[in-house]
Length: 339
Image 1 (tube, rainbow, N blue to C red):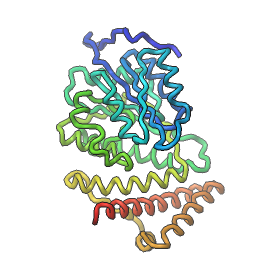
Image 2 (cartoon, rainbow, N blue to C red):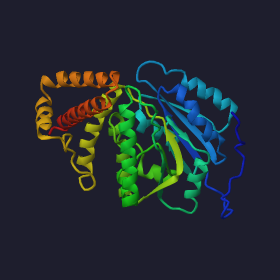
Image 3 (cartoon, helix red, strand yellow):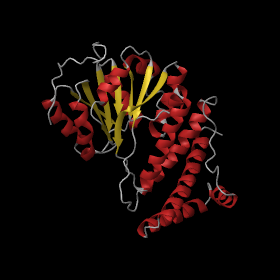
Image 4 (cartoon, rainbow, N blue to C red):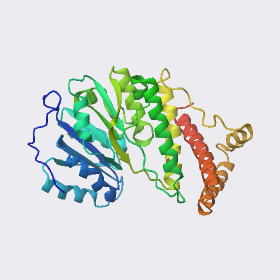
């Protein structure tokens, strides 16, 4: 890997003005193989003043060797810094990276995201003279072809991301922050510290921590900017078990979001849009002894659809299973809040 000197001066070609210094923060958890591909283009970008890699070790047990790899990298490139946390989750790891960073701008990149050349420079340029911006780059999901069994989660994620991008483009700045999607996002470090990336820590164990941060940025008066020229590629992957766990955390997170931001987030209905018979079945199963039986049956249908390469069966069963898990997550969150 060829690295540029940290002493290289970076200037905006159009104005000749010096670009703000950029600390790139990459939180990582047990993705040792993918991390090298993530870090390489970031270090190849001359605008990267500092690369803070936050290794989130499991709450119990050792990591997979990622920390040792990053330590070795620090010996070869003075810009690389290692921060270690334990059981912090994505939001907590990003917060630890923010507090360790020293650049004027902080760029948050997920460990399964690969930047296109010039991404860091592009983010720095967007903040040149800009005040209180949250700059969101483009991060489409790579969908492998031809399709193979078990890819349903990645396909769902890819389609949902593009739907979010469409909303950003149609509705503008406020929508960018209302539906913030982390993974390729930058803002001034002073703004991030003022708003507080981690909040009160509630979303460490839930999904939608990025949306909650975006809503706090909106209330703090920051401006969301979506720039499709700041491109990266997202190498998404989920097992069926991870897909189910994510869905439960998404349901719980949505309950908390609607409770804290009733003016910005509508209360979610996990069964909205389903035909009446399916709605009745899933609603009746929720919280009762039938729920795990139905979840197991749907999981079996997902696996069977994949094995038979009957993609409509795999997709339909997975979507119903996700609805069931959303409902379970929302119910648990409501119970914890005493409702």
